[in-house]
Image (cartoon, rainbow, N blue to C red):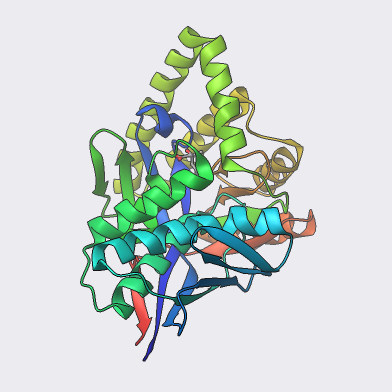
Length: 328
Ligand code: MEV
C-alpha cells in the first residue's frame, strides 16, 4: 500500500512582517529546520492525524472530531488545518479515502518560524504523492494557503510560499514573489524566547493600531517599504553592516506597533550588546523568536550570550530546498 514522507522548511522573515499583510514587500528565507509529514492509507474512511511534537492526536470522520491524545479543543484547533489540506488533495483526486497522517518536526511551534505552513505544505505533498497525483508547487502553495487561513485569519501567504518554494524570496501580496539570488550565507542566529503566541492575535493588534491611527500607520508602511528595498540592495552587495542597521530600524517599527514584548526586548538587547550588527523580532512577535545578524567572527559570542540569557538559540542556515519527497 505504501507510505510517503514529505518535508518542508521553516522560515525566518528578515524584513517586513506585519506590513506585508497590507501589501508591502517582505524578505523571507527558508532555513535548515524541517517539518516531516508521513501519509499512508487506512482500511476505514477516517482521517487520523497525529502530531508527534505537539503530543496531539485524533481523527475526523464526516467532520466529527474525536480526540485521542491531548486536550480536545486544542487538538481540534491544531489538527483542523491538516484536515483542510488533506481534503483539498482528496478533492483533486475525486475520491474519499481513509488516511493516517503523522507529523514530526524540529521546528519550534507558535514561535514565528512558520511551522504551521511547513506542516500544511509537507502534508499536501505527502498525500498527493500517496494518491499518485502530480501536483505543481503552485497548487501546493494554494492548498497550504487555504489551511493557513484557518490558523491565522488573514495571512499574507508569505509562510506557505516560502515553505513550498524554499530559497530566499521577496514577497508581496499583489505582485507575488520573486526569488532573491543571494550567494552568501548570512551569519544569523535565531533565538526562541520560549513564549508561545498566536499569529492571529498579533495581526489583530496591528489592525487595531492601523484603524486607530490610519495616517501614522500609512507612513510606517512607507518606511517599512523603504527598509525592505534598501535591504534588497544590501543583500546583493553582502553589506552586513547595512543589513544590521536596517534590521534595527525594522524592529523599531514593530516595537512601535506593539508586537514586541519583554522577552524579545531582553534577548534583542543582549544580542546587540554582545556585538550583533542588528537584531529584531521575526514573524508575528508577542514572544516567539528574534534573529540577530553578526559578523562571522562574532557568531559564537552572540550565540552564547543569548543562550546564557535564557533563549533557545541556534545558527540558521538558508536552504534552497522547498517542499520535497523524503521517502516513497
Ligand atoms: C507571520 O509569519 C508573518 C505576519 O506578517 C503574518 C502574515 O504575513 O501572514 C505577521
